[in-house]
Length: 146
Image (tube, rainbow, N blue to C red; front, side, top):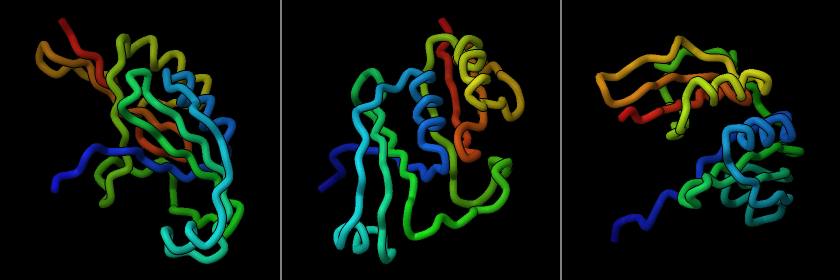
């Protein structure tokens, strides 16, 4: 049997409120917040004593979700510099289709969004850019042209 769908992408954050605000400004909708802990969480993650706050956000079309997690325990492990280049093994990019890439970048700047390189044109099809979002995660933006 094939997969049914991609349910969500998880991102571990230190500042939950700032991360939620960033993705809401991008246009995602907060579905809810909660806490996760207990034996099921330990078993699923392979960690002991899991206790984290989560926030689930969905895209306006309802087909994609992000799950943000702020660990209370065990202690978060620093993954190194947050300005790592895009070609590090283990992809750390999430891509979103947007209506207006310039406007989206401008709205995300006050929330810590920094363009990695610049806005690039791919033929007559797309405007594309990468920007750093919460915890250094690279967020891709794509505006379809025409």
